[in-house]
Each structure stands twice: as C-alpha cells, then as structure tokens.
Length: 270
Ligand SMILES: CCCCCCCCCCCCC[C@H](O)CC(=O)SCCNC(=O)CCNC(=O)[C@H](O)C(C)(C)COP(=O)(O)OP(=O)(O)OC[C@H]1O[C@@H](n2cnc3c(N)ncnc32)[C@H](O)[C@@H]1OP(=O)(O)O
Image 1 (tube, rainbow, N blue to C red):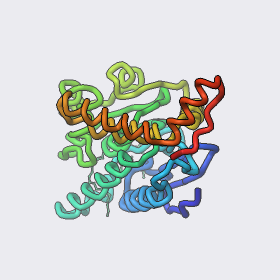
Image 2: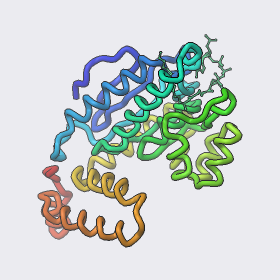
Image 3: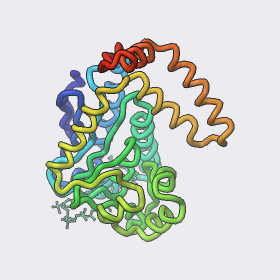
C-alpha cells in the first residue's frame, strides 16, 4: 500500500497491518504543525485507497510512537508559545478533523501506546478504535497545567471511554495514569510487558481481524459509531437496517456457506 513519504511519520505495511509511527523522538513525538499536516495527508491518502468494497490491501492500522519513551507527548508546546488564538483554534480544528477521519475509516485502527500519551497524544489514541499499551505507558490530559483545555477531542472522547466522573477527575487534575490503572478504568484494552511485545500483540490482532469479513468489520465500525449517541430504540432500528444490508453481501453468502461446509471462509470482500 503506497501512501507516499512523510517528514514526521514512518509508514510501512507489515503483512495485513499498516503501521504508522509518529517519528519525532527528540521531542517525545510531540504533535508539531508538520506532524498534524502529515497525519492529515496520510488519513486522506488511506481514505482514497480503501474503496467501497472490502478488497483492501491492509486489514488494520496500528498507530504508535518512535522510540520507547513516548507514544505522543502532546501538541508541541514550543510551537504553541508563538501561536495566536486564531492559529490555536485552527490547529485544534485541523487535528480534530484527523481524529474524525480515523474514526470514519472502514478499517480497525489500534493505538499501540509505547510510552507517554499526554494531551494531544492521549487524544490521538482515543480517536483509535481501541488502545493497547506497554507497561511503561503513561496517559493524561495535562492541559490544565498549561492554562489550556483539551483541544483534539479529549473533552468529548474521554468520558465515552472511562465514564463522566473519571474523565472529569483526569481532565480537571491533569494527573498521569499508569498502564495498569488505564486498563482498570477501561481506557486500555490490553497491557504488554514492553514496547516490542506491544507491537507484536497489535500485529497479531490485525492478523486475527484479517480472517474476518472485511465488509462486516467495516459495517460494525460504522454501525457502532452511528448508534452510539442514539436512544436504544432508534439504535436498534439502525442495527436491523445494517443487519439487512449484511444479508445482501457476498461475504455473508461465503461466511454461511463455509460454516455449513465446515471450511474456512474465503471472503470476497464485497
Ligand atoms: C506552527 C504550528 C504549530 C502547531 C503545533 C501545535 C498544535 C496546536 C495545538 C492546538 C490544540 C492542542 C490540543 C491538545 O489537547 C493540547 C496539548 O496536547 S498540550 C501538551 C500536553 N503535553 C504535555 O504537557 C507533556 C509535556 N511533556 C512533559 O511533561 C515531559 O516532557 C514528559 C513527557 C513527562 C517527559 O519528561 P522527561 O522524561 O523529563 O523528558 P523531557 O521533559 O526532558 O523531554 C524531552 C524533550 O522532549 C521535549 N518535549 C516533551 N514534550 C513536549 C511537547 N509536548 N512539546 C514540545 N516538546 C516536548 C522536551 O522539551 C525535551 O526537549 P529538549 O529540552 O531535550 O530539547
């Protein structure tokens, strides 16, 4: 999957996984303007290559950070020093757009948090479908320590992950959360011993996802985003509509056929 080259990202296909590494280790992989621009370009390029059917070159995306100290330590504070309020809002909205595109991609996106995920880094991770972490990972929204508020979606997404009361405590205090607490409060799905094991674990999950119907996985992602804010009755109605659409796919025919024939399905991806 050729997505071009980027100044601040390493992008490589590893089997069924597209691995995206934020690559500014000297600055704890902080989100400078160039990183935001590269992430914007990357998400647009992925969108253009994952067409309407499920025959995509990869079956999952892994987002991680270079080195073993930081995933992403937030927006670049040095660059923020000279920013005007208008520029701040513009970059906030620009990176929010990146997070929305990640959520809209028809592919599972896994955050492999290999160290500090603070501020915009924690927000980037929460825009992914789920988070795996290494034991050295630390999460937090320390914007209040800078006289700021979260600006890349943390005020919206944190509560949906850990509940309103815990989200308020973490955002109001700005305190750091270790990997084991992040697992306990539901921010993280799995914790691995170290960054190497974390990346291998994330790749193993993508390999597992690759054995499923890509059309069905994409439909589940879209459906769960669609029904999340809805009242139960309306959500159930959308689910029934999605179930009907699944019945119209070739993947459904193949999946059911293979089960009855006691074979592994070879999903056509449409
Ligand atoms: C012109 C275009 C500009 C666009 C860019 C900005 C985008 C606009 C922003 C709008 C919306 C922002 C929304 C977001 O919610 C807000 C934030 O993310 S605010 C930032 C939140 N993050 C933090 O507060 C963490 C700051 N870092 C730390 O607390 C510590 O560095 C650490 C992560 C706990 C690690 O501590 P140490 O192990 O002691 O390491 P150092 O502190 O010495 O760090 C090493 C090295 O990295 C530099 N660095 C670390 N974090 C950042 C950072 N966030 N920005 C810039 N640089 C960072 C640190 O300065 C050191 O550099 P050195 O001194 O070695 O040159």
